[in-house]
Length: 233
Image 1: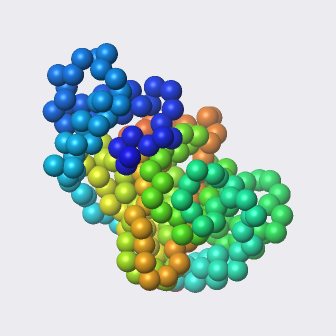
Image 2: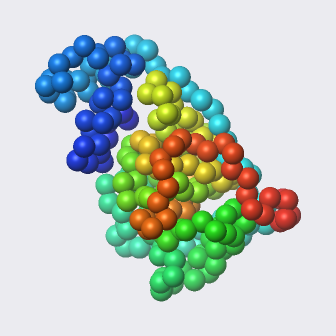
């Protein structure tokens, strides 16, 4: 399931299958073999030969921003119906930058501070805010470029973001706890289960085709926040 989530649309599934055929040793299969057969063989291969995990981490959020944002998240009024369905999350809210977000002015103001610290020129037009998101392997098909994301809360076990690497046999395991990472949601990704307390996440993303960038790598380790060192940490 983590390999071929139901969120794959159109030609995305055939492309994903083709990507894994060679590394899973099933390149010999006929191109006309049913997709589900190919998928099951690839899954069986990775069960016997687990993919290599690459541990990485985002950049620590300044303590001043971290504490203010966490306070807002803990008092957020969540929508009665999640703004995004099909995800395994207790709460899911999407804020639209440049539009009215009735009832969320204070939360949005803090998120704007975080984005200004990270990358004030980023063409973010939406911000996803979640509580206790986990699992839910998917791709963010509406994204047109990379995104910024962080997780906050009292959890002390798990909660890492996982994403397929540039090579099929690799998986990035990203520590985003109290950290901000630059990541491309157009790669298949999911969140590990967590324990010890609540886990909140914020994701700054862009759906504007005019600001599209090439899909290169899942985790961008060259990210240096615009305000790095300028805010008390």
